[in-house]
Amino acid sequence: MTNRILVTGGAGFIGSHYVRTLLGATGPGDVRVTVLDKLTYAGNPANLDAVRGSAAFAFQRGDICDAALVDRLVADHDQIVHFAAETHVDRSITGADPFIRTNVVGTQILLDAALRHGTETFVHISTDEVYGSVDHGCLETEPLNPSSPYSASKAASDLLVRSYHQTHGLDTRVLRCTNNFGHHQFPEKVIPLFITNLLQGRSVPLYGDGGNIREWLHIDDHVRGIELVRAQGRPGEIYNIGGGTELSNRELTERLLAACGVGWERVDFVADRKGHDRRYSVDFSKIRTELGYRPERDFDAALARTVAWYRENRAWWEPLRAHEPAAA
Ligand code: NAD
Image (cartoon, rainbow, N blue to C red; front, side, top):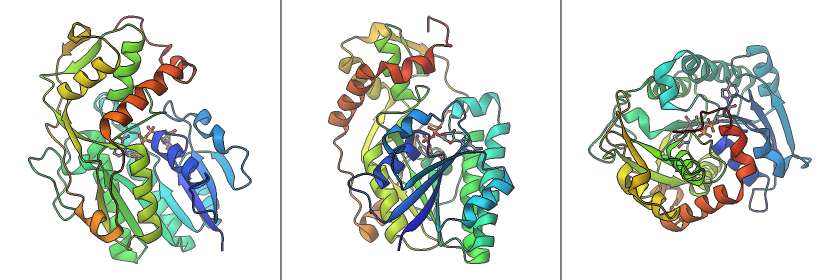
């Protein structure tokens, strides 16, 4: 039987990769997908061009905080995969309001609709940032200790999702992923920001001493993990997912400079981000053991392909940066 999947935030970076994969040659084949997306600055209809002609695809522009719209859409779908969120930590520091509305209230509106309409499975995309700054790979059972308004809003939604399983028995499944990278990522996140700055002949802003550590997950590995959890995960469970490559921002910068053929003279050390978490890290042995997940993308090769994509697809990202001042 065809599975009708409502994908929120499907015009963004991860959501659009997920939708293109679901409806692509390696997808499950028995699905129909509706994307619900508000098309904020981060949502880009061009990200869905590859599937626009598919009979199994539909797009609805709208806000997950619009309860009437959400109710109507959820009624017509079997499953929900929930990506929609305000996602940039720096923006949450200068204005937390949209983060609370979309990430917390929007998630609650979706959950209530899922409950009313007996949604079979609700997959929620959370983040490793909910654990806060850590000195070891966190297990799913460890307490949440978010630092930024962004991660606090994600922790709130993550816990809300869990509560709808605990209280109402809704089949919810949560993924807590590490930092994603790959093509089609909005050029405000560090990898595409640095690549596009360097391609434009600008310098790159490195926070603090550059010693903050992140684990990198290629988008293809993440999308595979999401599909494993949607199709084979257990109700009520949380799954950490990572890519296995931990780097300081200095080490990452070194690689990006080399990939673009420039040196450290193109780096500006700038004042650290307020409340900047030193290290995120997850233990993802649970998804390995239970669902057979393994990261398959070699970091350096995947980073080189990502740089090449931005080099070859200026028409995608240049308009997104056009409003910015010329010098950085
Ligand atoms: P993104 O910013 O690229 O895309 C977010 C999408 O959500 C956009 O298309 C936007 O238009 C849409 N959206 C925002 N508010 C909405 C609303 N009120 N109603 C409907 N749509 C709305 O984000 P992303 O990087 O693709 O992240 C997707 C999810 O993964 C988010 O929940 C994020 O917290 C999580 N996540 C991302 C990363 C990462 O490295 N990118 C890491 C951990 C977790």
